[in-house]
Amino acid sequence: MAAPVLRFGRGRKLLLAAVALFLLLAAAYAFSVGIRATRGAAITGDEPFYLLTTQSLLADGDLDLRNQYAAKSYQSFFDHPNDLWQQSVPTPDGRLLSPHNPGLSALALPGFAMGGLRGVQIQLMLLAAATMSLAFVLADRLTGQRAISWAVALGIGLTATAFIYATEIYPEFPAALALAAALLAATRQRQPGLTDALLLVAGLSLLCWLGTKYVPLAMLVSGYFLLKANRNGRIALAVAGGVSAAGFAWFHLQVFGSLTPYGVNVVYARWTTVEILGGHIEFGERFYRLWGLFIDRRFGIGRWAPLLLPVIPGLALLARGNMEGRLTLGLILAQLLIATFAAITMMGWWFAGRTMLTVLPLFVIPLTLLVARLAAWGKAGIALLGVWTVAITAGLAQAGHAGEITIAVAPFDMAFPPFQAAARLFPLYTWWTAETWRLTVLWLAVAAASVSAVVWPQVVAAAKGMRRQSLPKRFTAQT
Image (cartoon, rainbow, N blue to C red):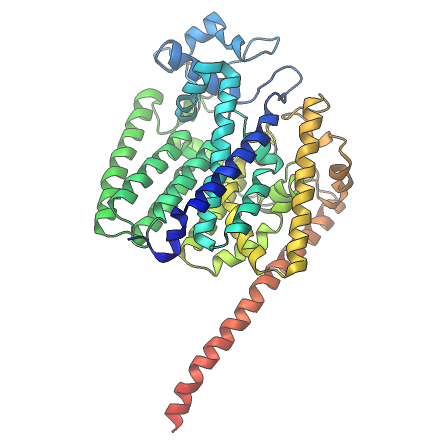
């Protein structure tokens, strides 16, 4: 039987609230369709190659892209005046494969079959809206704050990062959907069982097929499940998860000759899996991303969405919470470490926030916990940050559709006054100047102070509680 704290998740009101959130966000995300990635093309970066594999699956039933390049069939979705470049080298047997896990390409089959590029964008738009709805349901389940969870989920769903990637052809939002679904399965009961394990394996399997880089997140959720589940649940996870992992490994070894598809990339051609991982991971020059991913003047998610900045003290509440809260914290921190030390760049040929997008919906949980504890003036402050965030997103949408900016080149050059007015408040990590150091110290001090303000009252309250509990024992001992 589900625990009492989880029962409200089955209510009709929760369903209606989730559907309303889905409809609102889907309507908003529709305005991100048609914003060009560059002056020359509607999509760029990795996007064409995901669609090229989808096209090959539909036309040829395989992942080999030679026919698509020979016929230039990519011109149906890649409108650049030049031909599409090749992102990979041929395999020893002559096949030409996209250097990406095929999960997103397979997922996009219905949308592409019905409407090509636009069909896929609409499909992903609906999946993105569903992701934020599931994030609301999860936050409602774990915090018990339905109204606040709904408002926070709407605000985070309307951030510029969520808005843009709702229709970008990248696996991050679908991966966030798979992760949210897996967490809902893992937390459905106080002691999960067989059904929960099978649902969990389905979600985590999709997560890994969308990208090998998501395996650490899957391992964290699996570890939590093993600690909480009953005997049947643990056995089911071990068996079903083992079969899924074996199938994943066998497929990639057969198709790519490696556990990852990256070995066919022109950059990593013929590298082993260990060599690829070693080539990606670097510590010395990337540590600044731990905060730069939030506050960088161009690519910081907090720069584009001030509503996300208070998430930092909210994370402290997760650390002092229950197992579900600590799992959420672990997932967010794990992705932050991956984005910091494993991702090649945080300033890539893409819009801000891509490397954190998979856990962005989970931000609803710490921000809800924080808002629920704030006084009325604090709630008003968060609301103002939300209004500022939505205004930036609206300005970005307008600038994109007007052709003022493109998404993958220099969106941070948009002239929208509320965005540019705050530029000097954020450090620019392209160059380390005296201003960069000064602003970095200031932001880190603000972060430390906000975390202390949240944690210290809890520490004091806990200390007083321990003191009250210990007094009767000492009195009894003395008498």
